[in-house]
Length: 381
Image (cartoon, rainbow, N blue to C red):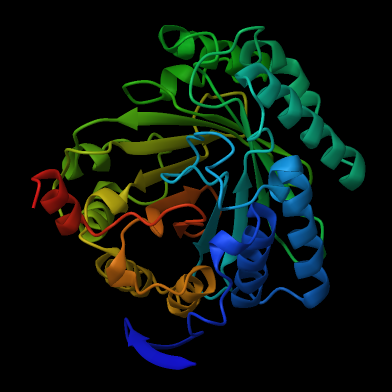
């Protein structure tokens, strides 16, 4: 083993010959091992860890048995290297981080329609297993699963891995399933059917809606969440996106933006906003999140990690679990690639303190080289 310091936190990593070689295993064994190590970082019990690791492999279906020596089962939009799994750690002051895993159950399907059908089957199997209702999903199913769906995804499932072995479940749906030009209309229809008749008017202007998400299962206050895309987003513009009327103000949002992006404008990959809705009377959102695609605004993951550590500390959050999460995912050094931390997000939900979330890539298939090396390669050097 070797120990190094990152962001002032001592980190012990396993040597390359102890961590499994991705090319010698399957997608299921590789991501299962990553999740087991992340559960340890998040302080979950061995019993819960085993339950959640098994759930992940089951959700991947036949793709779990696919050798990583082969290409990805599909060119999924879920990650840059097309791994159909993503992890995240959500930090709050004075608490252990919440670990989540995002998975595309239909990743091995031949068509988008089949991908969606498999995803729905997996969600409903989870509902039977953990005794929760899919009624809200059923209400809007026809809007997101047409006979010939378009767009970059069909259905993703996010599991928040809480103690007790029963996760909180959320589904991500594709508003562009009937075409990108109809995505706003699809979101409006979905919100109305779910009782949020005034919600769409509260949203900020945007260049489309990449996702609509629904909380299913055992949530204290289930949400419907609408994501929006913001190309060429500036820090000042980001500060004006929230429509909640509470939580972080423009100055705090701008400060977060500049701290994690190290720039005043997102002129490459666009930023994302998300508004969540819980009550149906006023149309006012109860939550807001700003997602910054930090992997496109840093040379390597060492830079991103340093920024993340600083932001977590400035919000009164312990950065040690994030620092430990990187060697739980890979044996490579943070400076040898970029994208292991894909997004950093500042989130607020009414009645709760702000959260900072780091979205972590599996890198089962590829490591994105540091930005300087990518530019040199493009120039033919």
